[in-house]
Length: 124
Image (tube, rainbow, N blue to C red):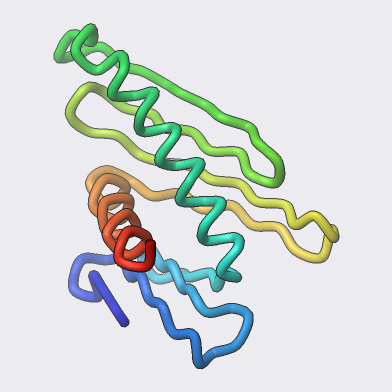
């Protein structure tokens, strides 16, 4: 399954690829994730988005906001205003075998997050 190729980002799920069955790509780079990494990233981004929604109605149009969550192996950060935001994500594996940082700019962040949500919900 491949989504978003024409929009400078991609999200793919292919269980036949073995343990790294998810691929997230933005603006010419990509990272492969294990299913457990994808699930933990989605759950953390969903928590971050819920925190954003909790304050959304209180934000003025031009007001900027930054929300951060540091949990287990992930650090995620939402930065923007009430209508547009970017995401920065940092991952360090529990085995210290790999780490990476991703940045999803406006408007890719919102689109990619909602596509991840659709993909995750289709499996649960």
